Length: 91
Ligand code: FES
Image 1 (spheres, protein in one colour):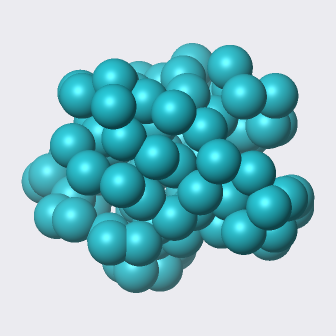
Image 2 (cartoon, rainbow, N blue to C red):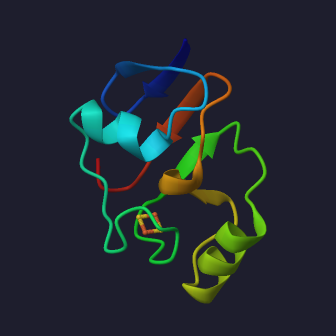
């Protein structure tokens, strides 16, 4: 079990190993923007994740194509394997 800490809400969510970050955030009651339903192509779900981990090629292409910072992660493409801290501008 890992912790996903949301400092803006002072909220800690719990996640199983390999659970999808977008699913955990939505289950925790946090709104996550999306127009591709987690397919990794719209980039609307981009958030700041610490530690950021390594985005895959597809994720990097999507972030670049949509002029997103490469410091962000697409939460629909993050599978949790450690404790994380997550921020976004709209929470
Ligand atoms: S929901 Fe579209 S890229 Fe994540």
